[in-house]
Amino acid sequence: MTTFKLITDIHMSWPERVWCEINFKHLNEYFEGTQWTLPPPCAVCTRQIHDTEVMSIIVDGKSSFLPLHFDMLRVTDPFIIQNCVIHCNSAEFVFGCKALDSLMLYKPALHHLPRGNICLDICMQCHSCLSKGTMPKFALANNLYRGCLPSRFHDLTWVEEMVCA
Amino acid sequence: MNVVSTVLVLPRTPADINETLSVVFIGPGKFRAEYLKDIFRIRKAKVWDFLLWLIIHNLHYMGMPLDRSILDQYLEDGALPGIENNVVKDNISDASQIFLNETVGPSEHPAEMLKDSNNKKDEPLIFLEKVGVSDPEGDRLTGRAFIGAGIHNLVSDMADSTLPDLILHCGSTAIREYKNPALMPGMFPMLWPFGIGGFEDSDRQTPLSFPVQANYYFDIPDHCFRHHHAFSFVALNIMQRKATHLHTHFTVKKNNFPTIAEKLVKVTPEILLSTASFGT
Image 1 (spheres, each protein chain N blue to C red):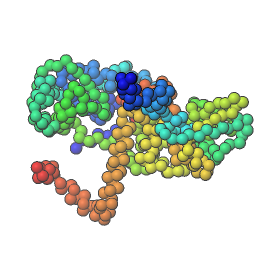
Image 2 (image 1 turned 45 degrees about the vertical axis):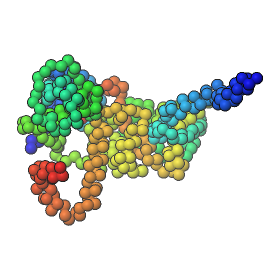
Image 3 (image 1 turned 180 degrees about the horizontal axis):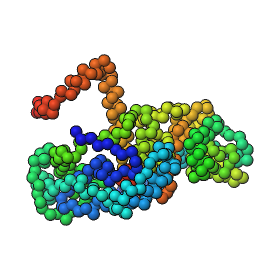
Image 4 (image 1 turned 30 degrees about the horizontal axis):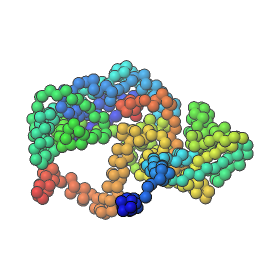
């Protein structure tokens, strides 16, 4: 009897067993906490900054109504119009949506939804500027568009760039 | 001081590029010319294709005269011609010396390495660092040996008076570093393919400062700025110079500029050396 009591006493002094569910829950938290996840790029400024909030805005594909002050982002630079629109060198500012076409937006940040609607990812900084009607600092339309380099030139070496510059 | 001017016709000649480049070969072992091929590779057809594309699409290249005959000075696909003449070989860091340095007490100052004579021992290990960042604390050589070898080569390079000390790229007018949106796009056509979107553009609706814009380029999904061999260094250099100018401006009154400049010119290397050794 005394041995049995001794064993129970020892058992009682042991820490409580950690359940599988708790183990997995914390493992999962650890896994997620140590992942470097970037938010989707902003459609207006193209930036991707860790730990920033990104809003989604849905634009009706059929109407020509534009949310916020999106009109500000329209391509006005004659050089860009000449290069992108007239020469059709790139379909960069053509999104298959009448309202959005010829706005300086970053194509990979636009997602086509069913029924022709388009979802745009926009960072909070650009969103607050656009809702106030001021040009976002890092917007492509704020003379930050650089043009696009054809993929055949992506492997140019730095000396080759130097020969041309 | 030898001054080299640039051509107004593109592409640049191999001689022109060579004047701005210097290869410092650090490491034990013999240098072989084929190591240069990967780093200084030039494909003639690709360069011409890129120039033709730039003439049509880049704002700064429109109307720029091209001369195809210059390309004849390059190989079809090979290293930059003449680059092998710019290689400064360094054989001071041989294995036994490094071992001695590693096993001896506190290691010597990098400047001490200048006194070392060239050892001609063969060593199979060969490596060639790319431009920009190198890892001076690599596991094959001690950091001090690496830095010492670098200084040694720089000094021996300077002693050769036929090489230019400073290269100024000059046209008919000086190229401004302040408020010149064409500066960076002109330097790196791969980063600004259309030549637009440069720094300190006064037409910007919302103004952007140089450092803020430079930082922006490291946040975009296009990694070309992050991987570029020179952009980050050039941008940082410009930022540091601007900060120096600004702080000098705060310290010295504008009226005193000529007198201070005169005093600064009078400072000789001997004075600097004696000041440096004063504390020790």
